[in-house]
Amino acid sequence: MTDNVRVRFAPSPTGPLHIGGVRTALFNYLFAKKYNGTFVLRIEDTDQTRYVKNAEQYIVDALKWCNIPFDEGPGNNEKFGPYRQSERKELYQEYADILLEKGWAYYAFDTAEELDAHRKNHEENGKTFTYNWHNREKLNSSLALSAQEVEAKLAAGDKYVVRFKTPQDETLILEDEIRGKIKIDTNVLDDKVLFKSDGMPTYHLANIVDDHLMEISHVIRGEEWLPSMALHILLYRAFDWKAPKFAHLPLILKPVGKGKLSKRDGDKLGFPVFPLEYTNEQTGDVSRGYKEDGYFNDAFINMLALLGWNPGTEQEIFSLEELVEAFDLSRVSKSGAKFSPDKTNWFNQQYLQTKSDEELTALYLPILEEKGITADENFTQKIVSLIKERATFVADFWELSNFFFENPSEYDEKAAKKQWKETTGELMQELITVISNIEEFNIENAQTEIKGWITSKEIGFGKVMQPLRLSLVGKLAGPDLFDIMTMIGKENTIARIKNAIEKLS
Image: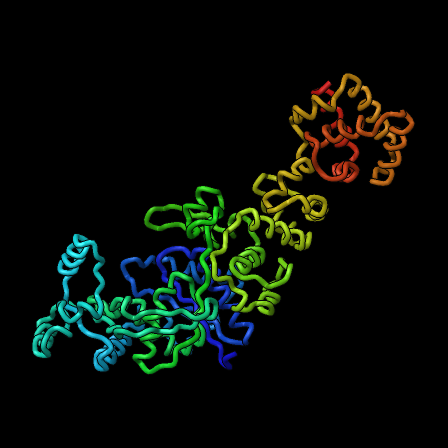
């Protein structure tokens, strides 16, 4: 492995960070930390038409919440700064000029109308228009014009782009860390624009120049950049620079398996596709986030890590440290990884069980406060310990424990019909007497007295315990009955039984 591992996550600030982007950041982070390397954040904001004002801050906040902070980036340890491409734009012109001088690039003066006409003409003849070796010397380019004509056009301020001059008749053998060897015939490549008429570089030029100047050793990015790899390798060659190693990650697929996971899938099936909630400042639309939906950041990261990477063992629950230890690019899949909302919930449920009762209580108390309930911390902590194994989210706690804080006002109809017989009212009345006579009302005494009474009456336990549960909870759910009784207290237990007799008998 390279001595000095330097990787980068280079998102465009065009909106919220999709979980596919978060996974790219995570895999870069895991790889960097495994080899004691550096994880760099670079903001690729050369496309000013799609720039969104609050998107960069969103990216930074998302990485922070995910607990995958960057070692270098905007405002942090700016060793190779600036880390925003818009602040580096003077730089790129210089490198475009180097390629022009070396004959690896040329000026193209074609107007949008001219290019449209060529496209239409090709379509009419059943062909596809590609700007490359077979027509570049016939089009409106510096390869077809004399030096004087080019000079005159530049002096007159004619609009132009700088295009890469892709070599002809060559077979490139590319090496991808995940996909292995890839063969490319250069004749099928087009001459990509490197520098636009607005004086800004395209992704291709800016990306290569920045990766070189920031000494990036490994480019780990999404599969959608795989078609650009040939051009990028050729650009390294044109500059006489050593290329980094490339690794292209598989797509995250829709739950049904076909096609890339999108926001629309999340909206349709009811799950978030962004780490944090996002408000579109122009439209006011709010998109859901994993954080606000109640997912734990460590559960979210664990789920993402296993989308397209597999540790080669049965282990599914990994701390971030364990992920760093186990991560290996050779175990990243070539094919897309199907996203599963159910599996994501399963991870959250697993993580919820590992949180301490104190931690969960601190998260539950504000929910109770919102409902106008001022609860004692120790009392709430005991409830949390009784109910947490049935919860997936902290938000589930209320549904699982509201009867500890409020007397039931209605009773589950189906359960009442089945469990509350004609003689049940009398039995419950007798039970009130038994409970009234328990002097020290604790779990042990309540169990001994009530179970002893049921046994002496020679009736099935269900005949008493089910109606009792219905009286205390309002439905046939909840933790151990004796836990409930001793926590709500003797008087409240009796009051709830009386209320049930009145309503159900």
